[in-house]
Amino acid sequence: MTTLAAGLESGAIDTNTAIFCGGGIQIGNRYFKDSNKKGHGGTRAQMSIAASCDVYYYVLGQRVGLGRLYAMMNRIGFGRRTRVDLDAESAGLAPSASWYEKRKYQWGAGTMANLGIGQGEILVTPLQQACYAAMWANGGWYRVPHIVRAISDTSHSGWKPLVTNKVDTQMQPWIVDFIRRAMRETVHSPSGTAHRFEKLGYDAAGKTGTAQNPHGDDHAWFVCFAPFDSPKIAVAVLVENVGWGSVYAAPIAFDIIGTYLGRSTEGIEVGTSSTGEHSGGAAE
Image 1 (cartoon, rainbow, N blue to C red):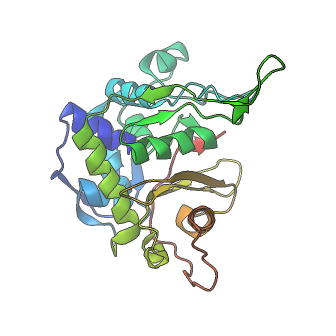
Image 2: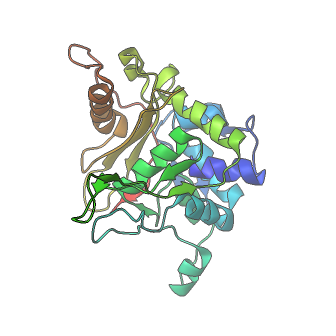
Image 3: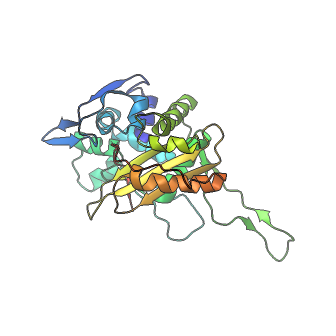
């Protein structure tokens, strides 16, 4: 969604831009595969999110370029600590041109294809992803997360609720609205990677992801919020070393949402699916 936001804001694409996906794309001497071996055909922006089309973001990453993608990642909060009230929080990594140059790394089209799908050198934490989900839910902003609920001391009676700072990404409202609706199609479109969860009735919006792991099996991601029109909860789920986000992370997220909203998933069979989905940012 970050790459799409950067593409829409910069004018590299518009909401109707279609990119053909035939199952992969050749860049230099490397063939970049799509998670759907048959491809998605001509794919427009909204369905690129819902169906999780790798090729769309291989191409868009190159069109956006490193400078604009880094600027969007930075605004959203990737590459820096959320400032949660816990020790030893990691900042993750949102690589910039200077980061590559400092390490004498020759980045080019292939690098941008990888970054375009949230892969490559990008590192994110589950808490950053939860803030990310909340940002889309709220319409472009989120609050600094916290564990402490209220504060008191011996000189005061009662408890003072903790209110944290608001982080506004300054994203244009029409872009946020478009991407929110694309995330809703992930659940509600027949082509969406989490479509089988529509029957749960939460009117949720989300994005599945599968992060490649050089040390073992892939990590499964799912970020979501619900209900769509009046969000009450935003969730990020990471399941390490298991595979597809739609198979392993999404069911956990919907159990959490169902519990929070008081709508049990017990007795509802959602099955399993390996519907193609592209990789998300690797977890630390």
